[in-house]
Amino acid sequence: QVQLEESGGGLVQAGGSLRLSCATSGRTFSRYAMGWFRQAPGKEREFVAAIIWTSGRTYYADSVKGRFTISRDNAKNTVYLQMNSLKPEDTAVYSCASGNPTAATLMRGREYLYWGQGTQVTVSS
Image (cartoon, rainbow, N blue to C red; front, top):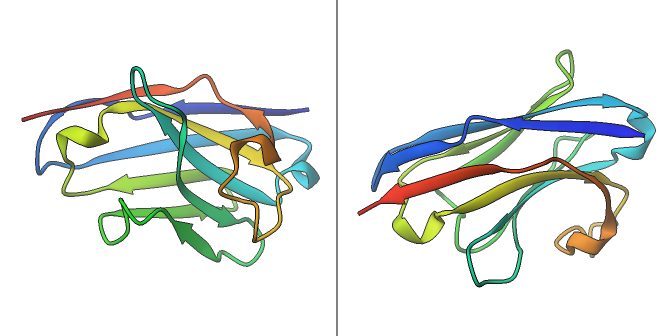
């Protein structure tokens, strides 16, 4: 089992920044990739960013590229999502996920085995 716990969500004005954290514990070999996904009310869950734990290679959705940065701290077993220049359309529940997707499938939520409980991010206009 892998346990994931997000933190860092909150309310911020448009143009502001937030940093989300995802602390991981448990079976580390089940976390080849760590992903961030988000789901806004009435919308489907969408991929935000992912990082390959060992290499540090990162992947981003086009909607956040240049504004969000995913990173990891191996010593702390924690993945971060730095979100800058936030927009009202970024408002959603953000969840981190762990699993063993391939590079071709890491944007698909169903490829991830373990999920955190989610943290709310609200961006006011």
